[in-house]
Image 1 (tube, helix red, strand yellow):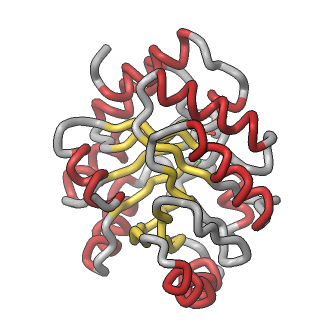
Image 2: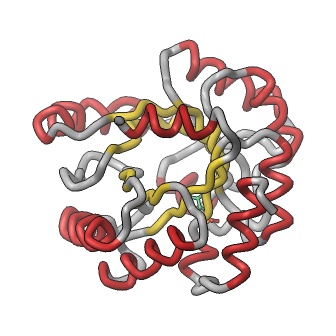
Image 3: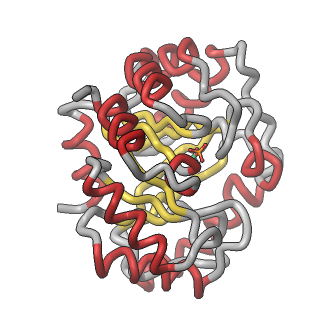
Length: 246
Ligand code: 1GP
């Protein structure tokens, strides 16, 4: 089964949890340990990516190390066409829809598409929408973040993504955001679209993960909480809350 079908089937049964690992933030060996731990604690897939300092070398090495030890699907979450790994099970083929820089909307994608085809990686189309505060990814991507008090604007962006044929929509508050995407915004987007909705940024505890799930997330994404070494019982509780089997 390809990874897109896996995601679609899995979200039809309930909310998923995905663990994001940034290849620039730890050694490949450590990333693999974190992936194994996340898998044991119930995470459903590993995303690999980061806004800065991802190179072909650290990307390949990290994905290979993870795949040698974990059995979860590994999905590349790119920040551009400068690094693309043939070792990933799939990659998000994504457009930052609210960037003011056309390079992040379609430029990197034009550079990357022939490489993805040549390497035979499964592309999963995704509309990527930055919500305030946006953090590093909003800055690097030159996003005009969706105001936190404007759920209708988020819903309109998400619906445009679906109408353009994108298979997934990702609302991103930015890694390390003080608060996640607001629940009212998640709910408004969920009511509007029919493709799976990913929510990430600022989800660090079980209570927040549960709020995000109850608001309508199909996939809850966490990164920092694993990077910070919270690999014990707290992570298990967070993943349970994200998936609803608390
Ligand atoms: C990145 O939003 C995710 O796309 C991860 O955010 O690091 O805050 O979990 P955190």
